[in-house]
Amino acid sequence: MTKRRLTRRQRQVRRNRIILACAAAALLIIIIVIISVSMKGCSKSKNADKNGKSTTAKVEESTQTKENESTSEEVSSTDTNTDTSSAIMSGEVSSHASSDSSEFAPPVVPSGNTVSKGTTSKGFQIQEINGATYIDGVLIANKTYALPQDFIPTNPDQPVNADRSSTCLDKTLMSAWNTMLKDATAKGLNIYIASGYRSYNYQVNVYNRYVKSDGAAVADTYSSRPGNSEHQTGLCFDLNTIEDSFQYTNEGKWVNDNCYKYGFCIRFPKGKDSATGYQYESWHLRYVGVDLATKLYNNGDWLSLEEYFGITSQYPN
Image (cartoon, rainbow, N blue to C red; front, side):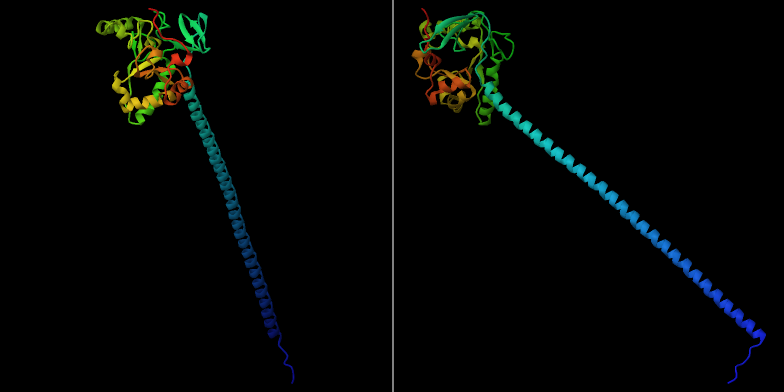
């Protein structure tokens, strides 16, 4: 078969086609490259966005974690503070309980001119301080030991500004009384101070009135002569109705069985007339501090101060 020879024109046309094809191919390759580069750029941009988002998320997460840790630390700190506060409060409660015990401590013994007067029959020291008698640090006012006419409470809760008052009693006594009153009230009991401090001059009128009514001999069994009354000390008071019937009331029974827990004693116990010099008074409480009051309570068989200290209570004439 004989090969056909192309004319010059045909060869030119063929050459142009090849050139165009090559150009088209080159253009296509360029377009592909451009598209490829563009797609890679987008991919990088997306990756950058993803990485950026991821980094931001990590930063935010880290920040949130720190905030949570900070919050946790604050909570922990708050809990610690709360625990510390609770501990402090617990300490305060404990301190308050101790304070209660200290509130039920013996009355403060005043300073001043002190003279030793020997000892009692049971070996307790007798001292005279500013004219008043103290036995083992306990102020005594009975028929044997009188108070000076000008004696007034040495540690009053309120200033002594009247001849008769329920507010100028001893400060330690009042603290103990308020606690006892609160506890009694919580049990539905109604106790109140009917008679507190009485001055020497006030007692003059009280005693003379009873002498006029019943005679001195009888009056001496239930009323003190001026200077010999415990009411002048500011360390005692009469509760509620000053009648024998008080001992049979719920209030009287509770007071008899519980007053020692607050530092009070039944000053003139039942059946102890010969020791105290006075008839039984269920309503008359004397503050001596919880330690001594517990000893005087004697498991329910009350002792008088006279019996405990080994002293007398008798008028000289």
